[in-house]
Image (spheres, rainbow, N blue to C red):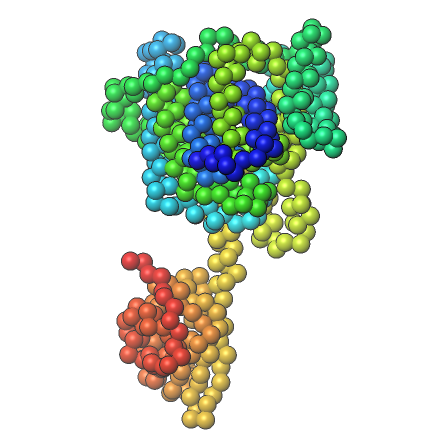
Length: 527
């Protein structure tokens, strides 16, 4: 919650100004993502306001910006298609309202799932994401942010062109003013902070460019061209359509709600991790899960779509000096105030200035140091980084992160799936296998290859002092090798197994020694 006593005048000014900048940048994003999901732009604007407001107050990271996002909107595309196929007899207006009801109910259920995950304190599992995967996510998302701006620059009737060269030429001929504004905005954001940081450079660019375009009567695309914002009102409570609680409808809603919940949490927790790296102060993943869940469920109850953290706007806020909760609170409140009360002002803001800001966000988000690190990092880590980047661009954030975790886990298992044995013969003629390394499911084959049962003497000792049995597969391997020595008529002794490990053994338990320096580790089982 807010603690005004911790705020200085400088903190308050920075948070309010950066929040104002972000609030303007949220408008076209919310509108664009509404179009992606196939709903009225008001749905995205309500979602951005409600989710942003709630997460600003109870979220796990002060200053992190949440709202309607492309990652979640893309999931709703599939939902819209399923609903359209389910109700082919409806008119266009009836279908639009039905799709909206499905999206609102899905948002509510997704929020409940996220709250449950937060209460079970599962937000900590974001730590399982390895650093190369995090770099890949950041780099891929930076490229996605940049690519998302190009549709604004597309020429009219793009389908009439036969090649990318023709499209680029037509775009420049039709939108050359936009290119000038974009370059001017980027130069302003690059060099103004070197002169003065009193006001966020992005906010200066928006105000100056908008005034020049408006009073200079310059023809260019503006926010008002995306949607009519003249009749937007404050969100009001909406009772979910109870007719949707049928087996067929819930069979569609529940899987989508789960995907929305997971995609939202992954993007939010990774954004939190990125800001932690930038700022040095660690946020709370579990609090963010709960806050996002409350925000999404509330958004669905007030006519808004689900969303999650927005890395682009979060970076804008962070780099503009908005480090406290007041900044994200200001962004959410100003968003709805601007749209409801100053829609005419918002409508004349040039799209190009917002595109320029997002291009700078893309540049600032991309982890350029990772390119240098690729040469020095292990090939497996480099492969994870590049793979996650590519999947983030062409597929989906959640798929990319999960793929990165799986690849990293497999590489880890492969690299550690080796166990070695040093063999010696003691004064009594007993052969001693001194094992080194972990014994688990991936190293069982390597473990079995260490022994030469036929040529071994009658007395054999396996010493686990420098080894560790990590799972039930390791215990079963010990039982198996014990049975082989028994069938060969040879006496086997097992040294330095932990008490927990001995309890997991079956046939091998009777051959274990009990010594003072036995280890005390636990063994993971399938139970």
